[in-house]
Length: 167
Image (cartoon, rainbow, N blue to C red; front, side):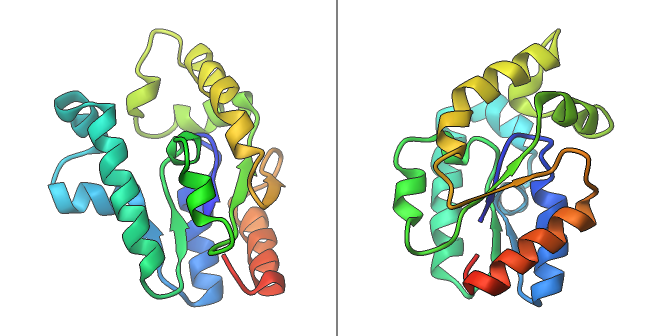
């Protein structure tokens, strides 16, 4: 299971790791969007964060109950009380560490994230990082993504998965 800030590379690295390991990718945000037919941003706007977190927790539980896969919940999943504890011993959690500066740079080229719609996304991301970091640090493994491309990070995660026989 890959966790980290928006912009850490979870989805991109997850796709590469899944291909390397020849297992499915369970990208929770993508699954939720496909089931509801609307974007995560629209879910936040129409239903609120609490409802999104409920959906996220439910889809993550379903992914964990299925066949072995690389599971990628949203950036805030790990910071929800009890979530990391609920997977302890069942799946390895890998924190993809990215500095705020790296995450902002990566996000500036991509889609808008619901919790980063602000006049100063860098400040918003810094606040998210401060709140979430204590949770992320509880993960089984930490891999820095700063200064690395997605393939390099995916190779590290793949090696870790093969060594531990769990992801």
